[in-house]
Image (cartoon, rainbow, N blue to C red; front, side):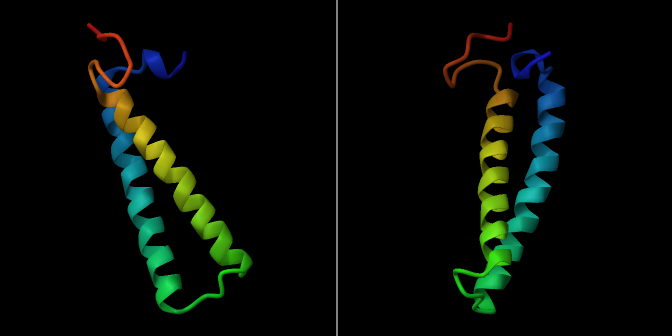
Length: 76
């Protein structure tokens, strides 16, 4: 199994769950920024790294929901 074999319904569920995680991490980073965490704080850096990684996963899981396009043949 690989990402090209995900059913559209599976990809939709994955994208929805990843979206929940991304919204949480966005709120966490926003709050940390509001509280003025220093940019060299280890927790701040890890939160930003986690948000960026989940953002990438969100983009890829969105692409998996597409029937065709985004550089992929029609799932048909």
